[in-house]
Image (cartoon, rainbow, N blue to C red):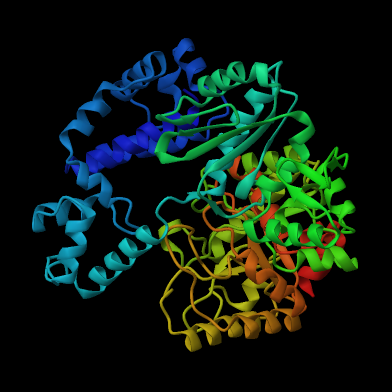
Length: 571
């Protein structure tokens, strides 16, 4: 087991201890140890072999014994015991956004409900509202959460699906009988949530059974749904459907285009082909009985007198018309980013120190990194007051001498207060290199009030970036309501960049809205909103969403060299 998997085991143990009503300090010990272990650079297995577990912060003698068992056997008997002691329905409750272990336990004991369906029924009978510790507002939030669960049923975060798909693809590409292989489907189009994984391989018919066996060994599925010569379907952990499609190499490019494009995009392409007297399908491009040679996907678009269309754009949202008239933008690439601006450290709610985050940003190839820990209103995240902000600057100056290969900027993720003011006075904001302002509270404001709140924030002359603009959480929380055209225009006029937040649970602003913001003249900033060293790499998801929203390099302020970026930040 790797450190991340071990951390998940400890987090689950912590949750189950809370559900069972155990001492909170005991529960927190597992949770805190998990966070520390997830952030370790050294593999936990090595520490077990060296007998150094007790050197890890928060790991006592009892926990060290359990971790040793977990590393050596891959199982934790104590966790199995806890699972057996908790009603299944209680774990279901934790899928409802905002419903933690203690509230779930209170609902189960107070109302006798043991499933989401029973809980929903209890809400409709107003029994939750009358339960001690809850009330009408809590009941309404629970109903909203249950509604979101139903709406998002069967969907998975892009990051979770892509992680699995990348591992499967890597394994398949190493197989000697696989000529070519690629991820396809909505993952390749960088959809923020997906229903399944599609992987395409080219392999000779006589070798397909061998490749399918290798795929099943890699996937370790919970269920084999179907196995055939051209398609094998399985269901992976957490119910993630995965299809392996097998084609001849001569069919690979056409099949990849077919299984990548949305249904609407493919239908439009086939219509263009028909007008040219051609037949386009997953097997190739044909004129009568003759196949037109196709080596790669670009050949298909060129044969239809179109510019090649990047996978992220294949949604039938104007990309085909643009490809026909030369109007496709030169989309941003990951390597275009010179810096990241939204990075948290242990000064607030990050899991890695300032120096660790800076070194990771340097390792990722960035020229500058902006430290933007939370401001004072975010007390739940140990937000910084002006004095701690000053102390942090001293540490930044110290670390700058240790890591000369990257420039460290001091910013802050400043709360936008309910009245639209920023959480620091102007004299404090003026000391920072840049300012990110975000909404973290009073998310249910009426649309007109929320709009005025954001517009007032945009008018602050020190503001550089409007952070995660809609405050959405994928598969959990809907966007805040505001009049977006007004926000986009104000941001453009004030020179404030709109963030494309790359946190896989946010991916905010929604790609469907980016073109409208760009048309209004707004600029953007792609940031990981990183709370750990590993999360610095999340910029890949933000770049995918930016490409999906037709964003070019010149639209993004942190593609600029440091001097030019600082001039933009101070406007």
